[in-house]
Length: 269
Length: 77
Ligand SMILES: Nc1nc2c(ncn2[C@@H]2O[C@H](COP(=O)(O)OP(=O)(O)OP(=O)(O)O)[C@@H](O)[C@H]2O)c(=O)[nH]1
Ligand SMILES: [Mg+2]
Image (cartoon, rainbow over all chains, first blue to last red; front, side):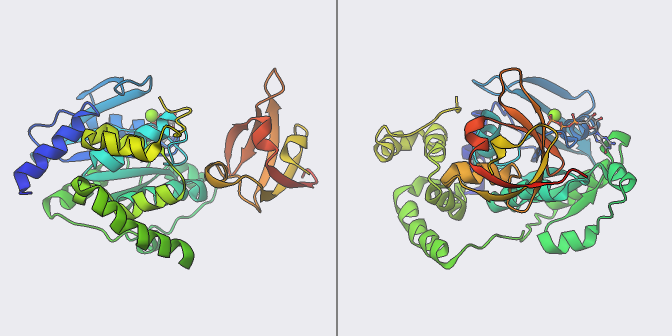
């Protein structure tokens, strides 16, 4: 597909998430654990240029806004806070589907600097899905108060993505976030992003499954992360098939056959 | 000993997570990881779920979930 056909197709998928972006602003999603300062960053960046409502068909709050930097506009989406991206709850399903299907140009993972272990778990899950990721290490004031020191440079080289320290409540780090996003978009920078590797047995299953999926879901081509999809299916996650048929109705039939009516969608509405 | 047997205010270390598949993954994602310290904070009025402090965050588990987590009691500090 050529560039403009591609962006039309992407805009159509994004409409499922109520994103109207006909002027193709770069799309930035804010993800992270609950209570890490996502909305504080969202408000700090967008100011009054935002509107709130619900995610389509769900009773979960949704906030969308934009900000301008160096003459360019960026569209920002505040995702629900989650501990994981495995679609165990409506919030997790929204966050997962947004990153997977709406494919934000950048996902900012907002982490609590006082609780790295818990927060990096989610950051690694996001990275496994999309390497267009930047880690915002927020609540640095709290970390300092507790005597926690974070080696940002070391973390960057471990994760192979940018890491930006922030104290969002005081507006610290926002300028750096805007600058970094601007550069990523303008220069088309792609990050390597650390990738989890699994046991040989699982890696062999992934390698075997990917070509089968690619043969059967040809329309998805470069619209999905195949390794990630294979992992979900090996894990027995059927919500991902349901989501594929939602965002790619052409596969509704195929997915119904795979599911044979035995899909469990408890807690997913 | 299982996590659902831990009394309020008591602390323990998680020694094993007996759940399988997606439920196991979910509990691990929530921070119920072997080797982690855990404290029972409070019960809801009906006896469950129970709120636990684990890896710096308060999380509530139902009895069926807590029963899947093996623990070793620790002395309160
Ligand atoms: N000390 C400190 N507090 C902060 C900082 N950033 C945000 N907060 C506070 O942390 C609390 C949570 O912030 P929110 O922005 O609502 O967090 P959130 O990630 O949107 O939370 P959920 O949407 O519930 O997941 C608020 O009381 C903020 O004022 C910071 O850098 N330092
Ligand atoms: Mg919020």
